[in-house]
Image (cartoon, rainbow, N blue to C red):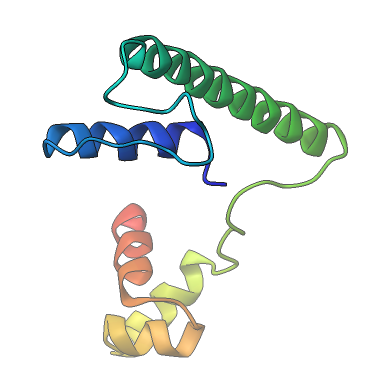
Length: 116
């Protein structure tokens, strides 16, 4: 259920710990048989293909979203530097400015440093 990559990682971990394994549901999955290296190799190839397909689907989904005009990523801050400057001129701390504008103190610091 976890996918081939996760299964392969679990099997590698077991092997590294010196533990042998035999699957009751997949008869071919056995660390004791003569074909163990072949089975692990096949699982590795399948895992790689899973990663490639996932990456392709992700890129395709992003392209479709962009073609529909959807904005991707985190929404931009709607705070103007003039607001930060005016609050700073009133003597407010960066923490107080952040509370006032609904943003973090780190965002206030970052925005203030770009203005300077």
